[in-house]
Amino acid sequence: MSIRRYVICKMVIGSPARVASDEREYVACSAAIDGLQHICDVEEKYENVIENYIEWESVISQHAVEQMVSFSIDYNDYQDSRKAIARKLLNLSASTRLFLDSLPRHANNIIHDDQTALKQIKDAPSVQYDTRLSYRLMEALRNYSQHAALPIHGVTVHAFRNMNVEPNTLNFSVWPIINLEQLAEDGDFKKSVLKEISAMEKVEMKPMVREYIESISAIHNTFRTATSAKTKTWLEQLHSSTEKFASEFPDEDTLGLAVLPIDDRGLKAGEEVYIAGPMEDYLEHMQKKYSTMVNFAKRRIDF
Image (cartoon, rainbow, N blue to C red; front, side):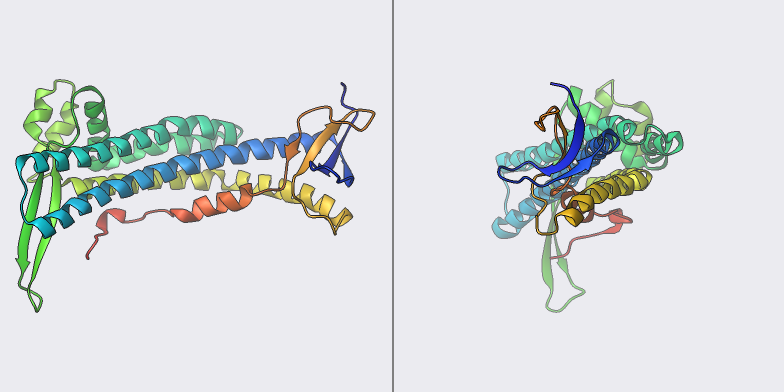
């Protein structure tokens, strides 16, 4: 079958409404859909990072609550707590690796014609690595957990009486810890990072992870900023094509609306490109769900 012309129509049975289109519009709408899909893919991977982080914090809080209730822990309970917290950190590390490794490919597909913006996205992880010890540590721990052992070596349970409030309260917390000697025994753990954390009085993993999430958020914000113009252009293209149909057929809804190649008999002669649907609303939802986390490392939970 050969393509003779293009139309904008509803891909539903019993709808004869059609508006003339052309190859330029078909190609433009196809590029818009492909580009917006790449942006949605990045948003989903960022969401995956943040939700794995929430699970990491949640399992720590869960064990603190269990301590508040039971006030005791045996060796098996201790190890179960350590392994559960380590498992959530493994999941978080895997999701950040997916986000970071796939980001350049998505960026290339979205803004390959803007080398300045593309370089900003590709350089963003290096900027965070160079400026934040937490980022360097988490990268080293991810490599360690992939090739050596679980990234959490123990947990400590703290219970203290707060005399600064009336009535006094008994507060509980659980702190994941890493063992520097165990890291040093692994010959592949990055020595420069080990030297940096060895100089610290204490390595507190919860603040470290929070600052790392702040770094990932900064990288993602660079991506959002660099691709915002393309997003706007693509959405405007879809709106324009949709409005062309809506103005011609104001009584028709736009369910299943697409740009379609047809043959000389008016039958489908190629793949349709859907131009009206939930993608725009979905993208807006994803971008609002987890905004940029400025100063996230300074946040605390009190309950």
